[in-house]
Image (tube, rainbow, N blue to C red):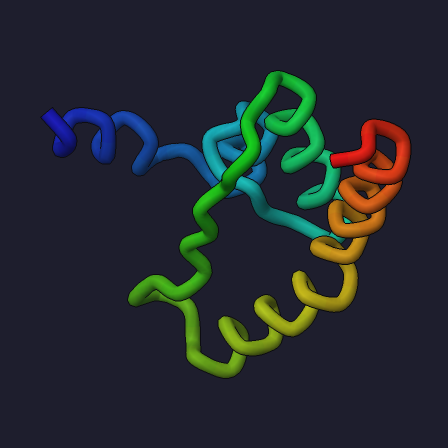
Amino acid sequence: GPGAARAAIAGLDPNTLADRGVIIAGDPDSCAKAIQMYEDIGVDQVMMIIQTETIPHEKVMSSIELFGKEVFPRFRAAEKAKAEVTGD
């Protein structure tokens, strides 16, 4: 069940989880690269869970702001360019 999966990844550090594609974490370039990997295989929606019980509220808000400024615009620009080419 879900408890087994949680136990399996509990001992892995965030860098290992990010390297394996289990989580998206790191600086804006790393996050954009990970999201791009999913987009390249056809994923068109990603659910972001930024707030957990272990991350202080100030860091959560900072992460949301950084994503909005540094990561999301890359995909908006790519989507706009794609729409101009395909007419979508």
